[in-house]
Image 1 (cartoon, one colour):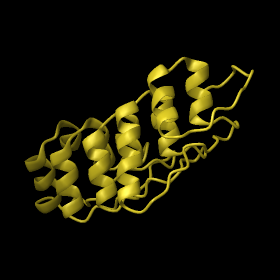
Image 2 (image 1 turned 90 degrees about the vertical axis):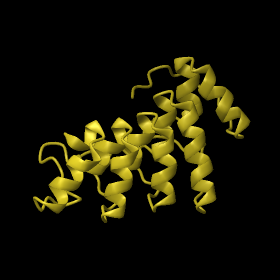
Image 3 (image 1 turned 90 degrees about the horizontal axis):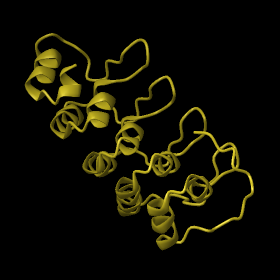
Image 4 (image 1 turned 180 degrees about the vertical axis):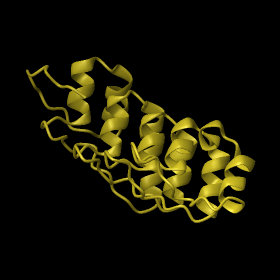
Length: 171
């Protein structure tokens, strides 16, 4: 709870005084303190946990990392911080959806751009034309949903447009 609330002293006390592991995870969903803090926008807690040795690649039961949680929640500054501190922006969840695809599907345009920029700065290449397991790119999904801001961003970034008549895309 302290991680979600941005309570750095509370998180610090749990780890340093009570011996809670920096990578302790909820037994029900596998969410770690780092994932909770990243999703909730608690940059101070994210910074503390990384400095205390938290693993940036810990996954929840859906195979999603703190970076995935931050990106899909629109936590742009945390996305950049996590990538700068070793998070892999090319990881996919158990459904084989990339962080970038999911971020676009949830209309987090600014965060999707930050993800691309931070990834490139760290030497990663994100395929913006990659298909999800149903065979749809982020562009396809955005087009069927009418997400003009995502479409504009993808076009500016050089995404290929495909024509599809299927409108049954589900997230």
